[in-house]
Image (cartoon, rainbow, N blue to C red; front, top):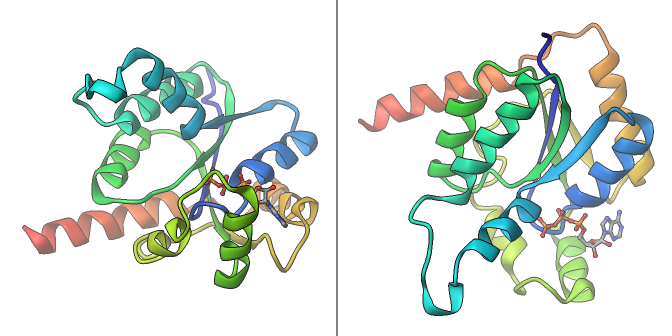
Length: 187
Ligand SMILES: Nc1ncnc2c1ncn2[C@@H]1O[C@H](COP(=O)(O)OP(=O)(O)OP(=O)(O)O)[C@@H](O)[C@H]1O
């Protein structure tokens, strides 16, 4: 069976990933949006966070295993997530190594991130800016979009055009090589 394609939207909080994922499904109805935030709601229900009764394994570990399971059965996904620390990166690369991936960088200017954060009211103020110190620093993308300069539909079209073009998808492989060489230089 052919593996399902995975479109990975990587960007800081409020950059517009969830909104963009929904927009892409309008153009690609055989793709399903699978957000790490939604997956974390399942984990949250299992835990008792108030009393710190927690599953002692990071959520992303289980999330990427689930993603690989969908892809193995031919289901196409759009991931809305943040590659925000070395452990997440390790889980991401190790688990999805054998899946077809389109790696997308989702960008938004700092001033707009600040505005969106205030308007939505459900994120810590300053969260997006603090994530910028790590996010996008080590990835090599197949395509990058700007959700401020362009409308969501324009961004979605750019991504779909890239997916449908003959250009080989090398973002994940190149990013993985970079990640591994960084890791071996630290050891
Ligand atoms: N192009 C846009 N212009 C203005 N506001 C936008 C735009 N895209 C998204 N927003 C708003 O910004 C907020 C964050 O959008 P969204 O949830 O898509 O971001 P996200 O990157 O998935 O964030 P998080 O990682 O925190 O879940 C929402 O309130 C959304 O309505």
